[in-house]
Length: 157
Length: 157
Image (cartoon, rainbow over all chains, first blue to last red):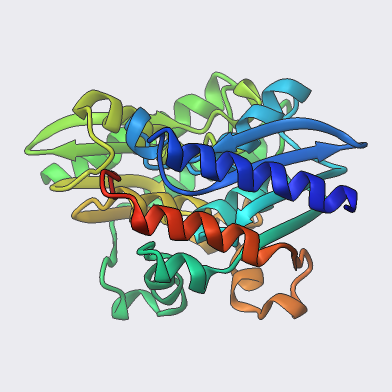
């Protein structure tokens, strides 16, 4: 068994635990740095009333707390399923070095998870989306960006 | 001032507070249901070491805790800037009724926030992405989905 398979089996085991113990959806994630597990998570949407508590988001938060950093440089993400757009975005923001996945988004769709609908919404221009973004007060918000750009002591991320 | 403008001004005020008090990036969000504010948030990435703590995600978590639900049916989201892919995904999972935005993703990019890079990664096939998804152990993970589908007492979301 390769180290990659060992970590992925752990992620899959977390997914199975979530199903068996009625903790949430069938998804697990493990984050590894320098051969050490620094974060893990399984889906907890329904048990914590948090629609963002997907396995990857939970694992990223866990790893960041453990590493006391808002970045996961040099880390590898092992997720039991191809990330949904929210989780893929969360992974990009965390900036790990690599991502391994097991099941695909098609497998997830076959099990009733509508990531595919989300992906297709993302690819459409706003005016063709089911849930459209309505624009108001743009110039007032732009002023906040101006004060951010001008701020000398900001912490960028 | 329309009610929509009132709520958006609140979201923008939260964004400005985040900048002024050095709490995180220049983003704020307010969630409203039946004319009542049920959740709010501002960016807290750097102060809480949580790369997922964007204004929208924080506000969604806050609203869901207040409403004791993992869904935001009938809610309106007011965000001071067009959501990044992570936040747009989080909004889709929370299933509110409408979204208002003020600044655009181009405004965010001009202020140094690389959502645009993320969006372009999303639109590329995996093999052309900067951060590629590497696939292993698919069939082992598919077994977890099978047990989910067969589970009679699952809570779907």
